[in-house]
Image (cartoon, rainbow, N blue to C red; front, side):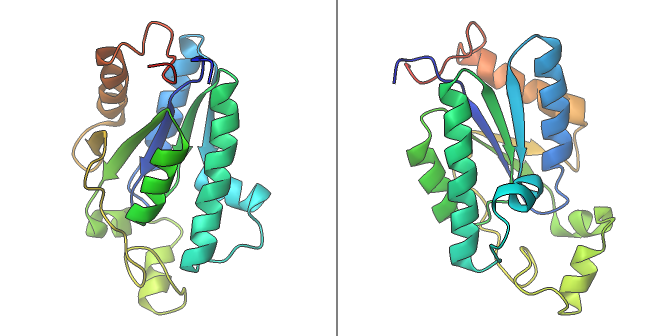
Length: 184
C-alpha cells in the first residue's frame, strides 16, 4: 500500500437497528465537507452484485467477501467507504478486519424488541411465523461484537449524535487531516 487508502466504516447490527439511517446521515455530512465517500448498503449490494446468494452461512460469508472486496477497491482509490451490512457472525467481521487495512467496526446496538417495532416491512413478524428461514436475530444468530471500534446506541441517541461520535473517533485518531489510514 502507498499509504493513501481511506477508512472503511463498517456498520454492523440487527435489521432495523439504524445502520443505514446513520450511514446515510454520515455520508451526507462527509459530502458536505467535500470528502469523497460512498455507501455500500448490504441490501443494495446483495440486489446488484450478490444476486443468487441465499442466506446460508456460506452464502452470507460470500456476500460479505464481495462487499469487502469492493470496499477495498474504493478505499485504495481515495474514497472513504461506509458499509451498512448486518454482518451477523464474528468470523465475518474478523475476516473483514484482516482483509481491509482501514476497517473500523461500528456496532449499531439496539434491542431486538425495538428493531422489531421499527420493522416497516414486517420481516420480523414473518420470521416469527416461520415464513422466512434463517432470519438474523430470530432463527439465525447475531453474534454481538466483542471489540467494536465504536458502539452507537441507536435506540437511545439521536442520529446526529451518533454521527458526531463517529466523526470524533476519526478526529481523535488524527484521521481528519487527510483521512488516510493505510499508511498508519
